[in-house]
Amino acid sequence: MEGTSVLRLLALISLLSRSTNQVRLTVSPSRSQFFRGESVTLICEDENRPDGWTVRRNTSRETRTECKGWGTPAGSTCNMDYLLPGDTGLYWCESINGSSSSSSSIQLSVSGGSVILQSPVLPVMEGDDVTLSCRARNPTHNLPAAFYKDGSFIGDGPSGHMTLLHVSSSDEGLYKCNISRHGESPSSRISVKEKKTTTAPPETPPTTEAPPTCSPSPLLIITLLCHLVVMFLFFICSFLLGFSFGLRTKGSDPLPCVKMTLPPQAELVPEDDD
Image 1 (cartoon, rainbow, N blue to C red):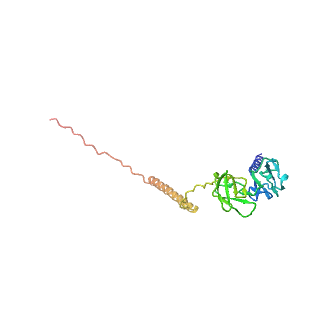
Image 2: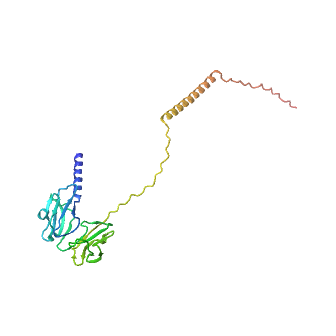
Image 3: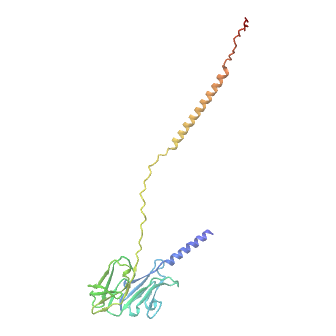
């Protein structure tokens, strides 16, 4: 009965560990904006179930459609060979067995224009540096660009790049760029993931080892006990011998009895009465 309970508990723990495992959607190339006609590969990464996922998306024209309707599925991978502006939308991984397990969603934008912003597609870690790149379709070399966050100008990039140093939650928002005489890119959101701080365990004070104590050997203890027993027997024998000798002496030579006689009393002479 107990063995059955243990097996059930282990099965429950295994089920919970699988359900809490989070699959991750990655994008190759790793950016959130693409030009019309470019290609992209979406990959559902899960160490426990590498082939148990499919990519779904929401766009302005469709909802929760699988990769086989707009891409080429290959296991848990979806390939899109020719992107169109209509492919702009939210993409995520979902379990193919009908469970509610899914990954976080990613926003992909396909531009029919001539400028895009290359920014991280996945949330960035707090404290990291993030580089934004403004890219024009033609010419291919980098051009000076202006960068904006939530509609406000934040700086120029002479070579088309801008680096955000040591990002924090205040850097989250919608970013876009503009290249003079070429146009403006769509907006992309940058999310910042809080870094988990690990607290070091408290330092334990150094322990001073007590000096080693010399414990007597068993042979020494036995020898000491033997000596004590011999001494005890010696005192007992001495006491008994002394006591016996005293008794013998008293029986053979008793103390003499002294007879005391009173001296004769003088005769009392009566006095003459004159």
